[in-house]
Image (tube, one colour):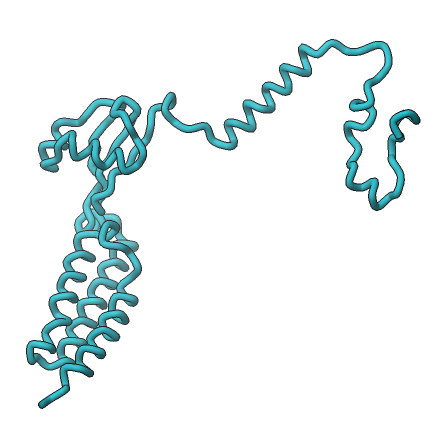
Length: 207
């Protein structure tokens, strides 16, 4: 009884892993058409040695497929025309909140399918969407309406600064006495530990 299939199976796994590692780390959902075709071809090719085909020929063909993919990706980086021809362009699905029916028909896409993809991105209403595009890898790109966008840290900081400015403008200056909190407002209470003294000593009855 021959046991060639054992070492062939191990070699197929190792060679397939190496070929896919060279081809890139993108998941299926992020692949372009060319990448998907070549990956499917590699998957079908790697099983051939088990059916009796020469294993070295199989690995060699797989290597050629991967090298072809690398050349295609290199050409896409160098030329926008090649990229548009091989990968394609993004298609507008919604523009200023209005569905582009013409592109929906071309892409054979339904509103229900768009809603499903939007829900996966946490968008609950079509009215919240300003722009929606179908990317070459099948993903949907979304820009929300200004009223539906979450507040960013930058915007929050600007709002906080504006509120503080208004408070300072409306604040009535005090003419008699100074509260303890104002005397010690700019003092770092942690530095007192190293200095063993306070820069602005508090009143004696509070020491």
